[in-house]
Image (tube, rainbow, N blue to C red):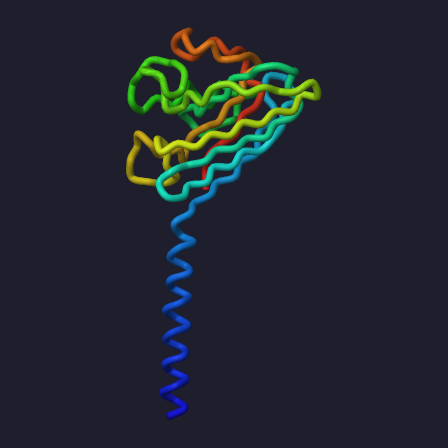
Amino acid sequence: MKKILLTVIVLIAVVIGCKTSGNSSDTKKISTVFESKSGSSVTGTAVFIEKNGKVTFTAHLSGLKPGVHGIHIHEKADCSSPDGKSAGGHWNPTFKSHGKWGSDNYHRGDIGNFTADEKGNGTITMTTDEWCIGCADATKDILGKGLIVHQDPDDFTSQPAGNAGSRVACSVIIK
């Protein structure tokens, strides 16, 4: 009788453990670190968290000139060049014109602008269902892409990339 009771308890623990593991696997997280580029001293981190079909992105940066800066997802997870151009152009899997996120035309990589305070610190956060982390949809999957911070603001109209100036920080979105 004790053996049967112990077996039942173990089975219940296994089922509960599997259920808990199943819930935690519904959340995916990627953390990245920015490298300074183009002679800047910009550093920072970014986090992408996918939960319930939506990705929340948050970046914290320092060493920026005070003011507005563009930030975009780029085609390649490659920060090897000193100017960050090894990351390629904006990630644009739907082949649309460059623009402001949420307008009629914009790249999936067109995150937009954020503001650095008088000390050069800036933060940006956004949530979207137009990205995923490691899914089978190439038009949504951000893995294997680059993340670039620009010296100037994105004007949301200049083609193909918004005239946001030099690339002052680069990060890669990889597992």
